[in-house]
Image 1 (cartoon, rainbow, N blue to C red):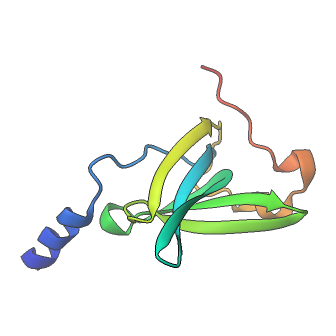
Image 2 (image 1 turned 135 degrees about the vertical axis):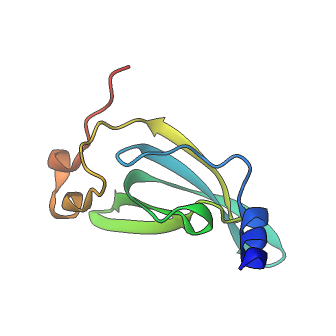
Amino acid sequence: MDALKLIAQDSIKAEAPVINVGDTVKVHVKIPEGDKYRIQIFEGTVIAKKHGGVNETFTVRRVAHGCGVERVFPVHCPTVEKVEVVREGKVRRAKLYYLRDRVGKAAKVKSKIQ
């Protein structure tokens, strides 16, 4: 069991992004194309965070061409280049799955006033 903990500690990123549910983020992902890599940006609202430690993930949702798209990103994955917080959201829930049923302005999250 200790060997598993050591392996887990090695794979954790030193600077994990600080994101919260409700934030609008830009996730920079490495996409392999042949022998090269390119960076693809996925921008949307964080609707869920799960687990913790090595297995920590977050779900990002956006609406593209009228169709809802959700992607789950591991926080400590090497293909996730960086995560930028565009704006912080003000929510009172841990999971924002109710946004799936909403359309247009009703699907917006209030912005946190600083």
